[in-house]
Image 1 (tube, rainbow, N blue to C red):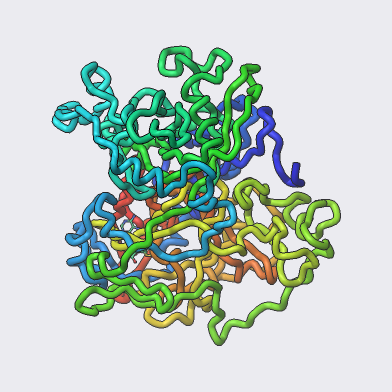
Image 2 (cartoon, rainbow, N blue to C red; image 1 turned 60 degrees about the horizontal axis):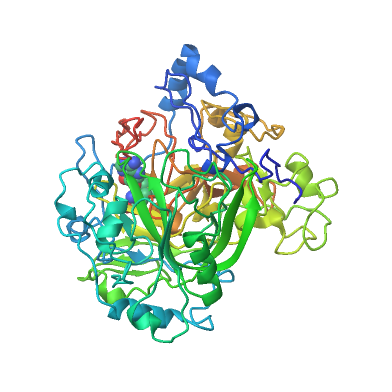
Length: 633
Ligand SMILES: C[S@@+](CC[C@H](N)C(=O)[O-])C[C@H]1O[C@@H](n2cnc3c(N)ncnc32)[C@H](O)[C@@H]1O
């Protein structure tokens, strides 16, 4: 095990960053006991007392302190951030970006016209070649699928009145012919397509059985038997449900636990699994190099709590084995790797909207600019901000492995903050993460440089009805993974021009958080509070520096606020150790399924934002969370 990884009772590495950790400022209206925290599904089998708690150590005290709440007003009245009111109190949008686009962007991915893919760095090393395979190439598979006669009799499925549980309706229909049993035509879908029931998957012809996790063909017929050397059974599709606590699941790789004979009846998974039909099918897929469609099942967030099935793409079975699980049963397992085949989006088809990320502008067909900024991968320093000297770092060589000898690990409390899994995941939110940097002896692949490797997920910008632009990922993002750094121009807060009109300013409040100024919460991963003089401004809750993404920035500037966010804000120091100028990196607060909007908590205090006229600004929140605070500020 890598230094810094936490061994759980299941022998797994525990990365249990939880929801709601993104809150930088205590919500002053909250009077209730803190809600039970949501843990990553992978850790749900761990006894409660062994589950690490990563919430604020102060939350409970602050929640119950009335004095504190009123004391907070001092901070509010001194609030410095001034924002243009994009959505006013009546809920009417008043953005400076052209509103007609809302109507022209349909709400679903089906036509795939509203999305424009932002070409970010994607780690392709894990992905396999499409043409890889001795017997059946992907291209053959596609033509076979397309040419074989569609055998489905599912008319009427869409006419169900039971919109809440269409699966229930379909399970009562004994007459439905499994469309895939004849290896029928499968319409083309793109990764990220969402279905709201397994019945819909069946109806659309993607899956043949709505109860099983693995959908497979028992016997071939037609073209497939014509001496082509294909062997049945083969698996067509699997649904990842997260019901096995130990399934590894990253965007490019999945370890899938097979299916018991009676998987779909009560008391499932209490017997050893056998190498019967579906499990054997997956093994056959591996040997024949036949790809499998992978879906993941998850529950929507916020106001939409329906169960949703997201198509994740074609995967190849690369390994198959039997495993004794923690409960002592033998399970069939296989490892699948994604075949990278995201469709190239034709920019002309995107409703005449172009997003040229190299110059950072979004144009409509009549060339009116709806967002204009210059793209910057890294923080730029404003002219009057002195770039701090490079901090002297560790003397390690290659990769840092021993926290006792690595001076950067020592700054993190004698441990590495990341685990190696999935390219590096933060174990817990911390006051600040000290990463290795230019002053260190280690190399670029050191685990302690995880947040410096750029964006590795396919992130896209899309249009929402009430919040303007928003960001989501085509890929599954595991909890604790770094998603993106908030880049822009690092400026002195009091020297910003037109900040009242700028929606893209991020206050660097690491020092305030560590000193618990205002209602800021400390993180579970504490570091000793640095000995800094707290001047009047700081005591009033003002950050000395901010990142202005108004004219320079990256995709982070489009990430919206949510009162129940799926990202959290983490201060990171790498090249220097000046907390006032810390880098701001957004990490996944939970496992994030593809296409869920990415959000973090902007953490404003109510009535803390003032307009140019000195009046308190109010902005309604449309995050849709059950416990929405109602207003952003
Ligand atoms: C940093 S920008 C985020 C990207 C922005 N939506 C855009 O179109 O460029 C912050 C602004 O987005 C809008 N916004 C973000 N989250 C919101 C929410 N939960 N409800 C309403 N508006 C939101 C507000 O206008 C806010 O000032």
